[in-house]
Image (tube, rainbow, N blue to C red; front, side, top):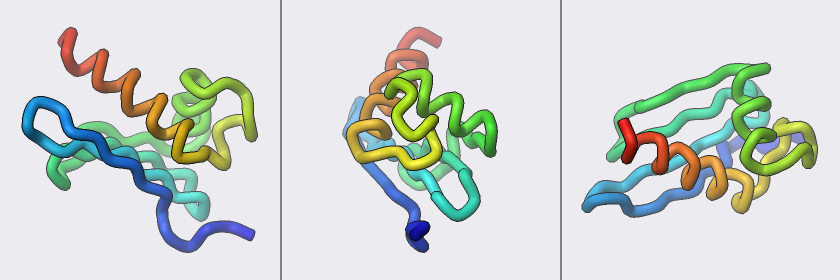
Length: 82
């Protein structure tokens, strides 16, 4: 059964709140900073983004909170270097 609400994890970075949100219904993956969309992916790109940091578990289509935290850590690293 698909989740009707998006899976969301949040972390603090430089005094701001950054979250990764994934919808199993649409496959949409969003990275938000204080509610503002920083990055947004749709299938198959969202699945690839998740699988690339979390391994091939569920091929990125059903991420766990740990998978989304891994994605968030990876994206925060990229944001720091840009």
